[in-house]
Image 1: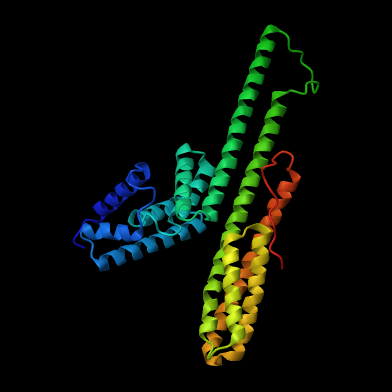
Image 2 (image 1 turned 90 degrees about the vertical axis):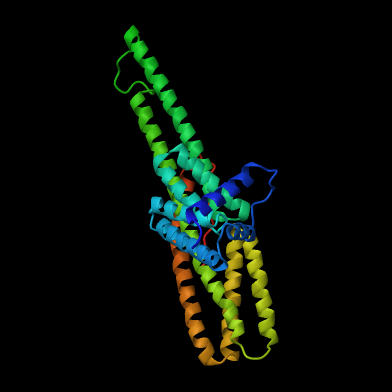
Length: 339
């Protein structure tokens, strides 16, 4: 290329940050077309721009693979390479948000928390319904509250220990085995147990979110194959036209639904897709549809597997919530996928 790619990335970053900090530039982010114009003005050719976008997608795919393998530092490195080229690449900020959050859960660094929050909010600017970004912010909020409570509890323990030491020095402590309910050792054990349960709840909830992401991926792959069923049909068939419209309507409703309502709609969609498969087998040429049917059934098998895995994660999480509901009222029971 006849331009400096690193300078281009730095310039893109500066322009994007300026738009975020200076509202006189505009209340919205630059569009991809505007970024393209900016790139071309810096010497990028049309072909070069397309190569850049593909390069960003490659980096993001690598980041997502690292995230699934729990290689969080590598996920961050690849995700930042992707967003350096295209700051608005779909799911770029949500991958970074989750990777930073997972590191923060281990290290409790304010910097990692701030980065996770920043990227989650950036993703929500582009897609206000992005569940990964929403879950990241929810987890950060809950864990931050827990850490604040832990710090306050530790301060209280230190104060209590200090008072006991002073009383001991002054000669007011009466040594008695098992007679005092406020032994510091017992308090520390109790606080340690509470902290452990909180961490268990956070990990269980994140496991549920992770398993749900895998269910969504498989459902999306199946859904992307469904339009091919209708294309494979020869001639016009009113029942297929009605079914195609119904499936489209269900997809739209699913995109706006959550919880048990979402799961019910997903089950309704599955029934309609089964109807479409049966009619397509009747109307389409068998040579044209056989391979497609195998692909759809393969996706459905993966969906069933991921749903089972999700339900197992929900069971573990729900048991923890029911056992400790009085101590941690912020955690809510999650719905299962019906068989």
